[in-house]
Length: 207
Image 1 (cartoon, helix red, strand yellow):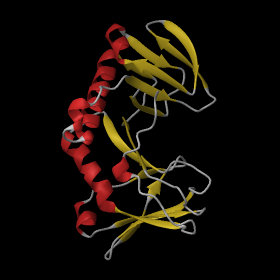
Image 2 (cartoon, helix red, strand yellow):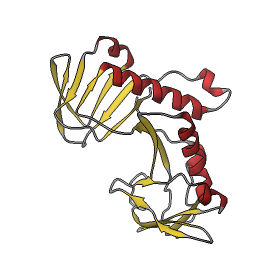
Image 3 (cartoon, rainbow, N blue to C red):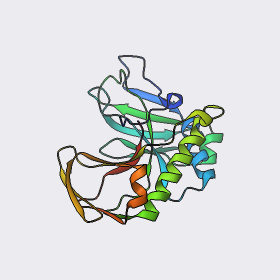
């Protein structure tokens, strides 16, 4: 079963039911981003987000230190765009999230995903994405657990929840809604894979 990857080291919760502003240490984000940057991954990245819940709707955000304060960029889906910046780390900056609700039970999710989604893929690109995702997930697992981790089962293409999308795989057409999963063992026989709509997210399929 596919699930979004929630890494315990970055699930920083707001414990006060009355809180509306939550401040998180920038260093936690920096460490993950630095790890990805060192790996030199061409097609995959790490994305941070706040899962949308009743009490967890972001009104605004900022990254602040004693010296600077800049607005935080985020999307309607509450993906957070955190820069990799040595100065912010050295200044012990904070990532501040202002919520419309109480922020009770809110969390930060971290997900490995493709940097770019396309309406059409060839075999070589899909194989490179699988390899990079698997390598990155292994690197984040840490020693010694990376040696006991199962490889990813495949790729998960996400669309609008109720959107009907036509998948064309090696000339065969299939209608799907919400998502489409491609198993790793299917990659060997792929010539082309295309969609009638561009996926919103391409992430690992983890059973």
